[in-house]
Length: 149
Image (cartoon, rainbow, N blue to C red; front, side, top):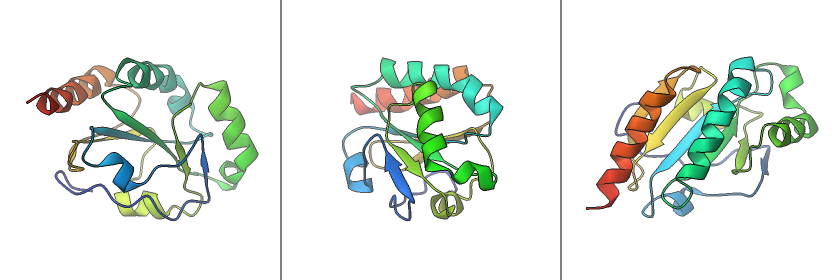
């Protein structure tokens, strides 16, 4: 997905966990962070406390949506996805992408990965890997600062 691309419709899920959101729920109100993760990804689990702090720190200013991207057959177990999400404090809506439809639309190949959209639904920042949370926060703050004007 290229910078300035529009946030896609959130369709093709196998399930939603922790509630469901649509593109219409996300665009026009506040910026959005969409993060891809997987239950079989050790780095995702290590990064989750930072993502959760982020979510909580900016809860009134930023939408946060998780996308569970399977990396193997074992990653398709919805019960296990729910269990791991609960263990790691993932309370934001989780799009369970068992058929990798949203993953393909995003052209995403990595977990963890982070997509920051401005309030108008335009992609402003992409980042992959478990390091660089300071850079991610800097980009999110920049997009949040634009909302004030």
